[in-house]
Image 1 (cartoon, rainbow, N blue to C red):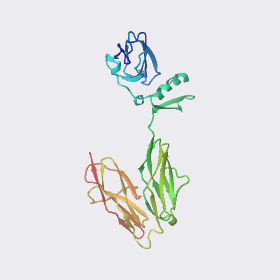
Image 2 (cartoon, rainbow, N blue to C red):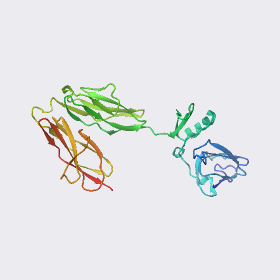
Image 3 (cartoon, helix red, strand yellow):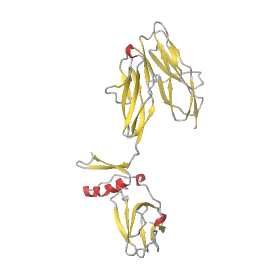
Image 4 (cartoon, rainbow, N blue to C red):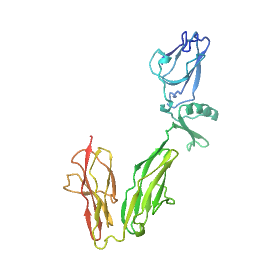
Length: 335
């Protein structure tokens, strides 16, 4: 454990004489040797003699307050390991919100209450939760205080084409602190909330021809603000065959470049389709394999480097025939 030297010579930072008979107060969040958890903050004092004092402190985060020396502020400092000596003024400040806090049991509320102010001053979020393992007890949960952030859309809802009677599912997501709530809206002439549509996905169990052309969006809200997604349009056809016509591709999947291990999103659309299926090729388009479960107009997956560039395409089908989109070529960068 290093020796920390406190030296307040004549004059002090404010020009005063070196203090005599004053003190240095030290407090440590100290982990127990056996369990490794933090115990109560214990404070001890070291007298200043002619403005000088030495204290042997263990490595860790210490609260240091010097009484009687004007111009010396209270500090949380990081004491390094090693023998020292180290001057107090050379110790770096430490942000306590970065110090790991582990659970610890205390027998009385007074012991718990005594440390709350220290934790809150350190920038921590403090809450009490019932401990299911110990009847009649609670757990003090401590976490760094999160910085509030307004919602930001992460996933936009995709436009969908469905035959009358089919299921339509719109999905969106957003980040934010605290986590934002969501409310889906429909635009049949003006935007209006959809009752009960407050999850990341909104499902229409059976679309009707009357729903053709309606738009849907999600509003994400938290205490710092709100954000709306782009509008997704629902296209509804009266019958899969469309009067004897095969589907017609309206949106081709786009080739793109992504990093190895990153997520990939592709979108395709066609009119008059009753079903669709995504396919992939890993041999430059010589053969194509069905992607299990990929039957929506938006496909999301992960790609990795190695071998030829993967290709993706979609096939749309109805009772009159089928049509296949162009192949989207994915260039994968990195290892």
